[in-house]
Image 1 (cartoon, rainbow, N blue to C red):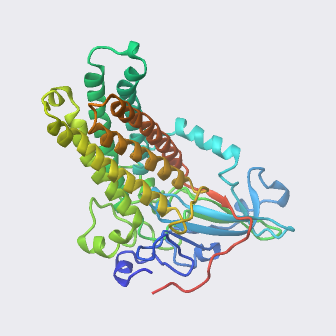
Image 2 (tube, helix red, strand yellow):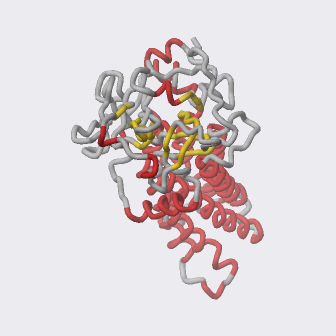
Image 3 (cartoon, rainbow, N blue to C red):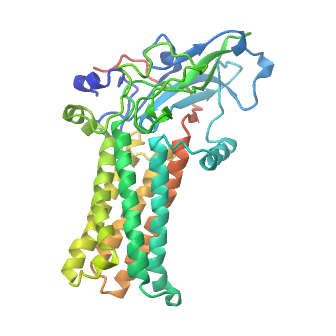
Length: 428
């Protein structure tokens, strides 16, 4: 499904028989392959294998928080690649046939609680994916406050104060729209700086000297730019003091992903316009930019001068509708990106839930603008304010989940049915 021109820019991105995606006309969004294909003798940019007495342990010394697995596969997903995540799919041990020792599934209660704790105990400000998630979370909080200014006085008039909807609502609308615009720009920067090479992200060790089992553990470093703590923009770095030893193609080589602000037209035409995630980010940024017009015109000095219905509709309500449609398209594309095909939901994928909540939030913001055309009707005004209220909460829920996702760089999934990765040659 990939084109030769695309491979020229992404030399290690192979779409073989195991690749899948919601649309045949667009690039695949997921691929599974055996762990053996990720060992140092294969074409992976940062896989490592550590041997020796220091790495070996006795069978009865296996830590409690690790699990034995018969089969381990890597699952590459386009969304994970943008976020600097490295997913594993493991098949638990049956009849003592384990070959690998892996971290526990990240969906169990203990690991979820660890993930929640990371949200309050870590602040990787150099990680653009983390910045995107936290900025959208902050912006959603502002929109929730804005919704209270607009909707609460209609529900309980006793809570109203002078100029609440124009002053409080107008200022928070401007702030919220600006924050969404900043987040959308960073989201686009994240999209064009996806890692070009195959970043394994896991280290392989000899774990049990009696049976030759292999321990699979997260690497300290990888080729994604998300690890670059020196500056927000730049290449992924290799920590020379780390125990992880790169065996081939360091991420700082010419095959690594160099930070760019915008791809070339040739890259856009041959690759990015065929990437559903890039199209979703483009729709999000376009929608946020148009929506910002409504935030700007919501400021009291400007809105007060929109004295005619036509002026209010054209400068305030219409940008909300058009911008909201951009959010709907973006949420839909992000949702489809996580699915095997366009009609099968993917509720086990964290990114799917993020997209669904953002999609619903986009519907709420669009309805607010559409109903605003009839704001002279008290019922329509009430429903428009209510749509902003529940739409803002949906955006907030999706953003908080995205915050959690941005810190979960090594998800581990369980496949009770066994390994199913195709072992075919890469498609031409």
